[in-house]
Length: 226
Image 1: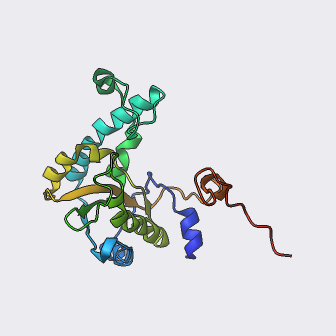
Image 2: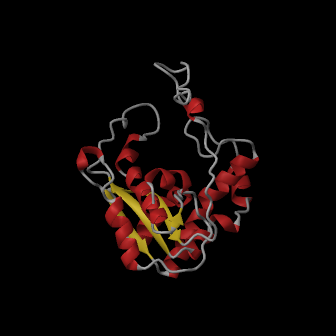
């Protein structure tokens, strides 16, 4: 598949056909994804490959607290889980919030679930002392995560990056035996998509670029030659 086609058609697949994703194909996906960059080429990403249904059911259960807060905040008109504005929804309301089956079912229906972690001993978290939530550590793991999805698309499979369960990271670590020095970064259900989207909705380049400084003129689409 052409690289640009893969980039433009790799969507968040949450519904799967039930077809298997064999180990040889999964190996090929990860064998290519591993060439993603990481800080200092220290390659701290690690993957737990989960096929057992009972383990996946427990992962789905761990999704619920984070998903409840997300839905409750959305219902209240808030931007859920953002790092600037505190949550204004009370704990009782969050606890009563119903979670759609669609938020947990992908973990049960996918051919395989990948739990991607990063070894915090080897990432350079250069923003860890800034007065905001740290994000730089993700530069050493999320390119790998996205490469997994691009490679899966190339193989005719798909999936999505899920993070709700990470709100219960201690539970994931206990479930899978993940050591304390690692952070859980993504939970990826992978399988054969029940449908394939090819026209994704994204902001235009002009809506997300600014020349020279914040608030500068956008980078506009060039006129065609001739």
